[in-house]
Length: 163
Image (cartoon, rainbow, N blue to C red):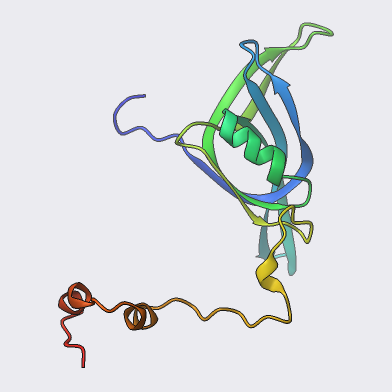
């Protein structure tokens, strides 16, 4: 990659097909799934709301990323995907015709997948959501200072004297 060039795509959308696992020719694990994104706007001429839906093929490489996708990504979840755009040429085995595929490749340090909403089907239990327990107060600098007896560094940072 030449200096200054950027190939990055960011998507936020719903997974519309369960991830499928395949092995590459080298034996590495690869996962693929589809993400749909929607764009909505108001058409003044027709006086109605319009929607454009685009389906993106996401391909994930790497031991850690594929493990996360296998455990956390399923149909219906809302995901944040960060990767690179890739265009690949392939030949159909049936009639040897050439085809092109555009895909979002997520791999290495430049790739990221974050599940934003599990669609009420979370694979993880959340024990802090028990209705009988009071939630812990949010952590703040004030509550942290009250628990720590040596606050001289914090006082210098904040420019205050503790009474």
